[in-house]
Amino acid sequence: MPHTIREKTKLLNRVRRIRGQIEAAERAFEEEKSCAEVLHIVVAARGAINSLVAEIIEDHIRMHVLDPTIESITTKTKGIEELIDVVQAYLR
Image (tube, rainbow, N blue to C red; front, side, top):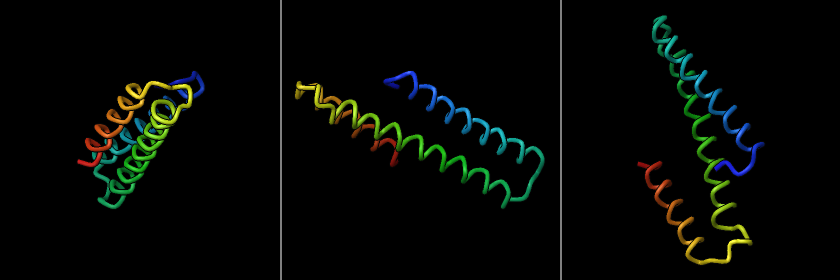
């Protein structure tokens, strides 16, 4: 992960935007912005993180579970087990 340079760049840009949102939340706290303003910033960051997680999960499914070049059931099973572990951790 990521599987291509293009994907790596795209994902890193998303992470950098999320970092910017988190830094904006920190500034909002430091500047004692209203609860509503802080909540909007945090909710936007959470949405961005959720979208990032969804994209990574989708890539994992496509590359490690559905990839037709993977013939080994052991490899596919490992990909499925990794996915289950991550989804369970995410939903806690």
